[in-house]
Each structure stands twice: as C-alpha cells, then as structure tokens.
Length: 278
Ligand code: NDP
Image (cartoon, rainbow, N blue to C red; front, side):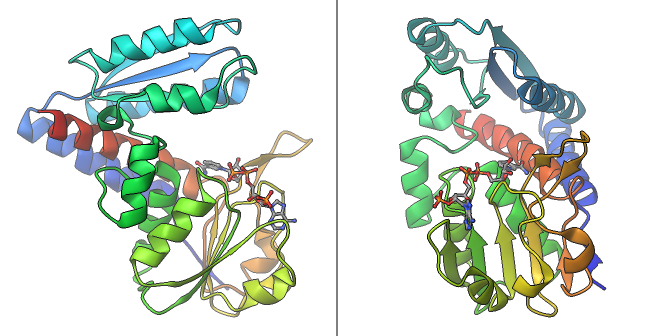
C-alpha cells in the first residue's frame, strides 16, 4: 500500500516559512490578483489565494473585472500594476473570456512581477536553469517529490501531458534534477508501457481516473496533478487512486495533494519578487 504524500502538510510548512520570513525581515510584499468574468472555479481559486496572502502577511489587491472587459482595459490595468510599488506580484487568473488574448496579456506583465512564471522571459530562464521564479504547480510537485526523501537523480521520470503550464515545465524541473525524462501526450504510442517504466510518474492530463494500476510500476512515486469535477460534484484526479495506491510506493491524493502546493509556491514566489524588487 502506498504512502500518502500529504500536500496539505507540505504546503502549510511552506506558507509558515513565508509568514515567518515576512514577520522577521519586515519585508512588505503585495500580490495583485486579476479575475475577469464569473467563472465559479476561478472565483474559488482567487478566494483561496487571498486567504493564503492573509495567512502569510502578504497584502492582496483584488481586481474583479466584468466578463465584457476589453483588451485595452485589461492591458491598461496591467500597466498600472507594473508601475505600482506596492504590487510585487501580478497574477491574472486563467482562463480568460474568449475576447481576450491570454498570450498578449501574460506578455504585458513585467517579468519581475510574473509570479506565475508564464512570461516568455521566465519560461526561457527556466529552460536554461537560471530562474527567479518557478511555475507554481510544477514547483509544488517537485516539493512533494522531495518530501518523500527520494532523489530524482538517475530516475526514470514520465510526465503525461505537455501543456505550457504543467507538463513542459514539470519535465524541465525533473531534468534539472538529473531525472531521465519522457514526456507523453495524446499521440504517444504504448502509453501504458512507457508509464510502467517510471520510478516517478506525473499525471497532468485532465481526465478523471485516466491512470490505472496496469500503467504503474510497483513502488513508483505517483504525482496526480489533475483536478476534475465529476457529475456528482466531487473532485477527482487523473489517477485511479484506489487501485494505483495498492501498487505505488508513494501517491498524492486529490484533493489534498498538488492543489494546495500551487498556492503555497505562489506565496513563496511573491516574497521572492518583493526581495528582488527591493
Ligand atoms: P491541458 O488540457 O492543457 O493538457 C493536457 C495534456 O494531456 C495535453 O498535453 C494532452 O496531449 C494530454 N492528453 C490528453 N489526452 C491524452 C491521452 N489520451 N493520452 C496521453 N496524453 C493525453 O491541461 P493542463 O496541463 O492545463 O492541466 C492538466 C490537469 O491538471 C487538469 O486536470 C487541470 O485541471 C489540472 N491542473 C491542476 C493544477 C493544480 O493546482 N493542481 C494547476 C493546473 C492544472 P496533447 O498535447 O497531445 O493534446
């Protein structure tokens, strides 16, 4: 039976570190969160980010804009926040309504305030291993892997998913720690066979219960990034937890695994941004 990797505990420890550093150093850190429209899931994420800021002693500034916001209006707001000394980090909650160009919005955020690390400049820095911020979800996954005490170096690592937000940076972070990394996607042949090679398997597919026990090596570390809402309203990961936990060595639950880590790393990144800017 796998040991559960407790994302709530690991994330709480990170937030406490951030809180203590802010309290002791007297650094003032501020995070602006921009939400456009009325997506209920985005609203929940934004509220959780605000709560985490309160806990850590980070000032949070929320900008809730209507669904019909234009590009011009949103870019003007970002320019204002880029020039606001009280704002060290800027986060635009994705997805944005259809009329808004996400790529252009992200590129407008000053790279020094891009605490999600989605800006091209930061993506490039991550690629060459010379970064200030790491993207929140993959960095959170790395923290969870570290919490097992298992070293990534020399391990077979398989990432399912190649999105810019999760899969690709995840692969890069595993590579930086000397893992032998394979990235799988919808065109991958013999997926189960490839996954079975993994000592460390990361699932970022967005399909409930996609990873089954026959895809997992005995004793593997399984990190489930997926957040899927089932028809009955319950949250479920990409990994079929009941059967995979019988075979894996370590596994993250959903909820309570990667989810809370993303916000904890965001807090850490905001503090880093404040330190760099001061
Ligand atoms: P995307 O939809 O952008 O990417 C999904 C990836 O899965 C794609 O690369 C796709 O391949 C691949 N894929 C789809 N079907 C298959 C298949 N049959 N076999 C192999 N690969 C497949 O999703 P994200 O990366 O943004 O998110 C992934 C999951 O993680 C979602 O559930 C999301 O909600 C969750 N998430 C959780 C976060 C957290 O804080 N815990 C934060 C961000 C995301 P292809 O490229 O070929 O289409």
